[in-house]
Length: 401
Image (cartoon, rainbow, N blue to C red):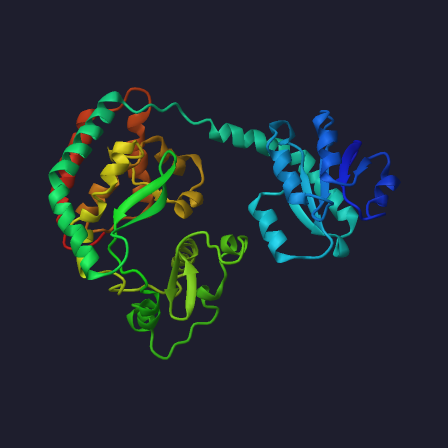
């Protein structure tokens, strides 16, 4: 630390940062006592090098002040540290969710540790923000007019022709099990959107799944008890959320509740380590009608509404659940998002042609191969037509893939 930095300290803990006065060549401080004083100070365009704010302030709390500060892009590069007089889990989780730069408890933290953390953030936060801006500047993308016209024509035509049959399927779903006949989940293509499908599982079947999990676990070994069961490890994303909230839908296995995101992470880790992990066969949540509409891909017909809305295309790369999209890193893996999300596409056709067996590397390669169609003027309408023609015979398949 060889340069003088100004810290704006908002709080009422007397003497906590007196150590700054002993480091006058490296640090200086401005002390304010509430959020009103802080907003007035910052509105005068006086930008400190870092902001340290206590959670408990007269009037509004430190989270409120953080929200106000982050609305002004001029303050994006200023590190924000939240302090609490004692550890409270709900405050910690909220600070994590809000992406506050760091959180410390006054009663157990040496102020010198906070100063070292600020020095690190001052050196690296601006560079990190510049990097984020560069990442978000994506390659130019524009939906080809011929593709959009084709999407609207096909989606509207199929919905019109299939509507009597869809009504029968909807009635069958409703008669077999209670609940909505469709479900909505968040998916990621070139943006996050509401993804529509016909419901193929029972609602309220969590207890049934818990009861059958052990006897239907295809990896279960008699008289073998797992040590360090991955199902016992809490999801870090769910742990950072307020109590009762989860980062993705919950699934119930044996006596465990595990979110969909963490289940997939643990399953991938188990595969790497050649260790045992739970996999349910003949999932009891799937209804008879649900099995039929899955095997015939009828459950995907409501995605034609996504096509009409412009969320998806008839042909493209499959949109990913949010938790899967968050796991994608690196230019090569993220290149798949240069193409629009689609109902069918290159890897879906290849996957069905191989009976559902395909490596993750091959899927990435095929997604990227289709994405290359949208670089420059490489898009081919006839290439899309060829993929559609290859999709038709694969629709009536023997099993779900």
